[in-house]
Image (tube, one colour):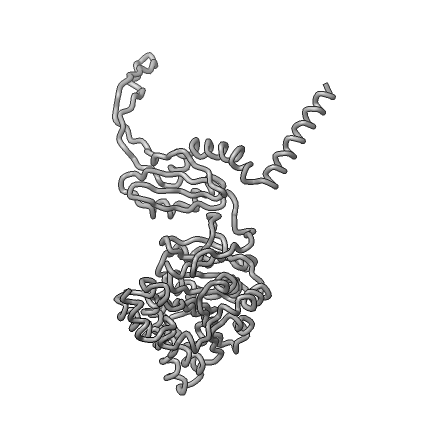
Length: 450
């Protein structure tokens, strides 16, 4: 008997160690074979109680076969009558079978009458605690349907190496909380705001963007009013760099002039934007990187008022009109608030892409995310200081996600800038009116007519 007990315990210990090793070294297969079936059964079995506890059920009248006590006779015997009657019951939303994903599962629900996706979004945290998962996100693919996407563990604890960019003006900079790639696509979302305090991962995201854009046929323009300490190491790949307010005014004037020239080119060709032009005529796209946006709006005295006004107006014009003419903005800053002036608020309205890292004041988070989703604002304020690179991202699909950028060191970004420096067009050539095609006026007209 003791030998049998020892053997049984040994087998159980070996089995437990094998399962631990399987889960540790190949979690994906472990999840599909062991974890997912157990979780799917648990979710389906507990859905009624969970829905009731989270306030997602509705009272409905149903015919019910029930037993009710009758009159009590003098002998003390209870007479029971069995009959049908209408009773109010709690009806749960219909749930399909959960489907596995790489980091969890997703399930489709049929909403009850009077329910909207926001009702489920408000209960997302309660659902996550009820099922013991890391997070639950809510989406609605069509009316009457809600999809719950659960992640079993935080996929942002560790992110992989940055993959190479395969599309023009699209860069994979990190991972979303769903496990998918976090991409910045300037063709889809032309202008971005990147807010974050010191050591929050804001500069690391700019490094990842430079590494992704460096091998692409685009012109990079930098505004670094911290004396150039941030972008000067990347100067080999930059076509232009402004390190002071005066230089910024001149460079913004160049961008506005460039935009007007491209307007004329598109008008001549009968095109609404540069992407409708023939490849031989299409001008090079320009990505404008701004570090410390607030420095463009701050002034020490009234003597700088006109300079700040010119800067604000030119930057706003680029934000309003630049997309169609291949000029895109990526604006970074520690402090972005309405107190910087009305120009900042107007510029924010032109930036559909929003990225909010950990910030020191709630107004910056409100300025970045407040007009999109209040729930995103709460999540942004909850980012801990020990997780640099984690941010709240408003993506091109109209939803917001927790995301984390890949770690890209300054040395890696500098190496990419030097390696691809031959792709950096000269700024004087970019802003030259006939640089769009490299042809004279007669050849240009002939090419457009063809």
